[in-house]
Image (cartoon, rainbow, N blue to C red; front, side, top):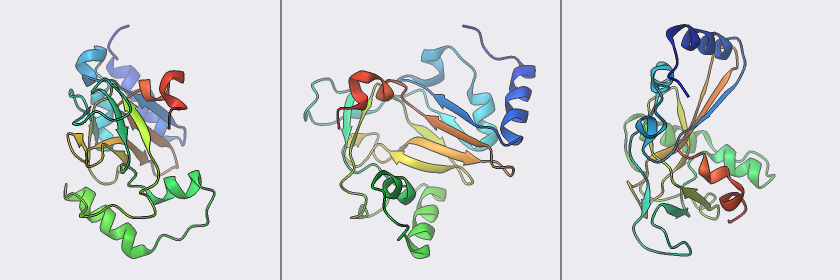
Length: 180
């Protein structure tokens, strides 16, 4: 109910750097809507929760424009591999192409066919700004607005601590989690 103090940010950073994990989810409108200052910590790990919202540009399956069905939003090959219980088949060339596109804020020309079948509902969420070494896991896809922006990202510390940041906590609620 209150904004974080500097001592709390130091404790969270120490927690992450000691190999522990932090999971943070925002909402539509980002830091302003949540009345928090969590971006102060996230910026240290090259992730920033935007004060925007993702909308679907055409109505399909869900009637509210902020209930976004994202069909081609997976950019992390390992995510889809684990979801499908598959062996690792991603080539180094594919990984390097993806890292280059994210680092230089470029859009991929075409979605990877191995990733095209996975879809999810992104409800009432904002986008993220990320820079290397943070990595995008999910994006808003080519049909939503803003187009192909990160909506779920991760950072791994030197000691193995993970920071995972998502722009929508609503997408994991019972109402949306089992939809797709």
